[in-house]
Amino acid sequence: MASVPVLSFWEARRCVIEQVKGARRLPAIEKVDLEDAAGRVLAEDLHADRDYPPCDRSLRDGYALRAADTPGRLRVAGEVRAGAIFPRPLASGEAVEIMTGAPLPEGADAVAMREQVRADGEWITLETPVASNRWVEPRAAQAHRGQLLLAAGRRIGFVEIALLATLGRRRVSVYRRPRVAVLATGDEIVELDRTPLGHQVRNSNAWSLAAQIRRAGGTPELLPVAPDQLAATCELMARGLETDLLVISGGVSAGKYDLVEPAACALGAEFFFTGVEMQPGYPLVFGRARGTFFFGLPGNPVCTMVAFEVFARAALGLLGGEREPLLPILEAPLVAPFRHQPGVTRLAPARLVADGGAVMPLPWRGSGDIFSLVHADAFVIADADRECWQPGERMRVLLR
Image (cartoon, helix red, strand yellow):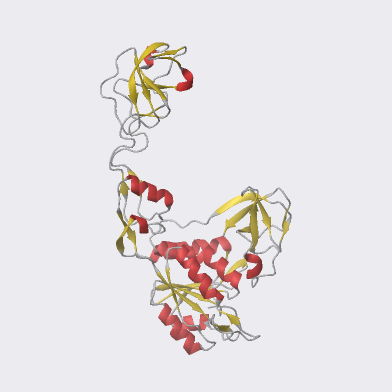
């Protein structure tokens, strides 16, 4: 264990991604109905079944015409609306009233908006020329038939659902959701239906992790709480290693009863790091045993949640078939000063203000303070080599 490194924040994330990418096997593939596809990972490449749009179409309400006939006076030969076609080619000197999205009549090559023309019964007059292809979306401007639109490994959101529906896909191939075992450790932990004594806490970490796992596309499996006994911890960890990923909360510090690392060693684990230079979340273990990756997360609730989002979620996404797991990070100016002790990367609870155009760091009482965290919708990321930021300066922000 002495040779296992402690990594920086970004080194640790790269390590997780590289290790899981290098060793993973893609999950089994299953078909689901479109209404059940949101949140799943696409397991097939999607190609356009025809040109999009399938014909030249109007981008505005107005008049379809020949650009060469403008400026001038044109006879309105009829109309065409979205969902219909004009029955014949457009003759020279003619125009057709057209609605947004309607196909251009054969022979037309431009659209004049209503505001550009002077209408007089069945005639319109244009004082200025209209350029060819003006307000026209050409056939296949969005996609050619056979074009790759989405590659396997993309998580399906509402935009992807719209695309699948556009392609007429009532069923779609997705990867099976990874099974993730959740193991909370410690004699002080009791289940939710128990009234804790003064030296006990309810098992909130297992339930918050289960929610994070579901949000990340996995299926959580909650194990019984591991007592502070090596044999019992080994037994429960071994059960967890039978799933696709094991996430452990607590028991990863250097105390006498922090048994995750000794139990992992007894199970033949390979360790990739045993600490990350970050707060909250310094004592953080990542390894593999019996062919399954595992994380040992610090037991304080905020540590557990932050460490999962930054590290375990990336591993879960990759194990679920994602191509590239991304952190939802943006930059925003501060509305108040921020200071921290440099030397580690610090993630501090914050709230986006001004419709997300700025960020306000929030007061909190450390990594056990769930009560303050519920008011946060983000974390500011303070670099390890800088001590303070002033109002108006931009900081990276991790969305919650």
